[in-house]
Length: 185
Length: 273
Image 1 (cartoon, chains in turn purple, green):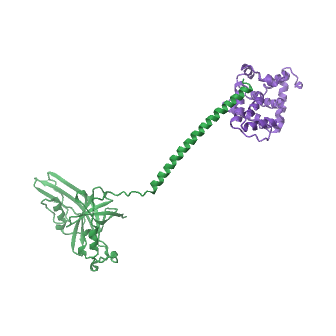
Image 2: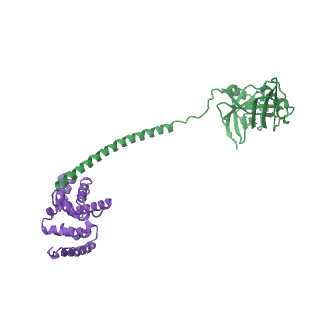
């Protein structure tokens, strides 16, 4: 993770390749994370682009108080919620699954999640409430600890613990409805 | 959906466009700031110069007024202590002039003078100015205390002057000048020097003489005619007070004393409560 901070520092020093590498690393993960909040492919793309543009134009300082990944996901989440405030849309009419495969044939889920099991899990998680989706996504797919998730979601650790408990319970019932065993995941 | 490379290109394209726009805006701001500061500087300099310049006094054209100061200086040097005035001799005369000139049968003009309040009792003196101004054969009433109604049978009214003003003349207080000047014989002082102050109207406007004369052709409306009793010489002066063309009444007036051909310039001194 220290490498990401170095890449970003390189970019701040004038090397655009630093940011290119960061985009290459985090583009898919951010897209899947934001898709759980706005649930629209074009909006998701716009928000992710807006996140990277913020880094490129405003060049905010990374102080190293948390992991670079946590910091970047926090920026992305704030961008998403600002976007939703601006457009006053929480959920799109168009399902995310349709949009994501329609565009140019790039299946972000398949590319990022890699295994069939992860793809199935992600699909079921998207049916959960946005907060449940976010906390589970950040834990399962981005491997963030409770403190990192708390930072990203602007909540306390205790709140994240409670939220995680309820999210898992909800996911379990969804998986069982879909014919899966929760323990397998 | 874009892939990561396309996303990076798109991000940098947006960044470049933004940077270009920002630089352009910076240039505009710099130019505007330079122009604005230049304009402000000129405005400040102009304001500073304007403030440092003395204001032009708004005085009317005095080129037509003749200065008689030289003649009075010589007169003042021969002041006689015997005839110094210990207090200002105040003469009050309230005169209302109502002069109607009428022509009867094209040959005879009747002038009627109406004096409301006056201290003068000599009818011959009072009537003198009317006969001079009219240059006609006149029928004067016997006494100024008598009010004579105008003859309404006249065929043509040629001139009507109806002014009501109060004028007070004050003789010059020589005692104050006693230390600096030799005493002057009273005979050597002109009337304008003797009666250097006049008050007119209510609230009273005080005018002071300046030993200047005014040409007759720039005289304005006749404000009033008043008498100035001279207690020492047992002689009453009649004075005609005129407006001056180009001056307001609160700026200057012209006074013509009886027996003198000059119209003396009296300038505004102060407004009395």
